[in-house]
Length: 205
Image (cartoon, rainbow, N blue to C red):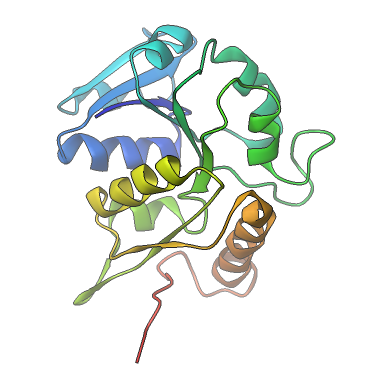
């Protein structure tokens, strides 16, 4: 699968690394392909750097993993997104987000052509994306959005990144719930002193 990644920091870099290992073609969408954060990612197999719009045009799937406050600007910079799936991995934290929106996925929907926008890979730390394994278990991922196709693709990409499962938590109306869930992890990891090496697993009986 051709995947454009916009945002080459911790989260974008972790998923680029995992998906490249799984055999996907990773197109990093950056402002300057010769000089950008995470430039060492192009040493990974199946990974290359491009300007944002060419990366988007060559991809079927777009991951956005930039700071939440830039969500509108980034969405508008993508160019033609018709027929493409966008996976939103951002969170508004401590009120730092796109003006006029309660979550980043709604901001993306309002500023792109595609309706296939889902939120995924936002509920845990980048360290857990690089290594989702805890003993004999792999932690789980979660996805929300109205797009059936988008959720199917995100769920498969979660498995390809090593997550144990990816659970569907509902439609677009659950975007904000996903961000609240992310803040729950942040609260435990950072503010309550549990540290980043914690993750969520859904158990059934």
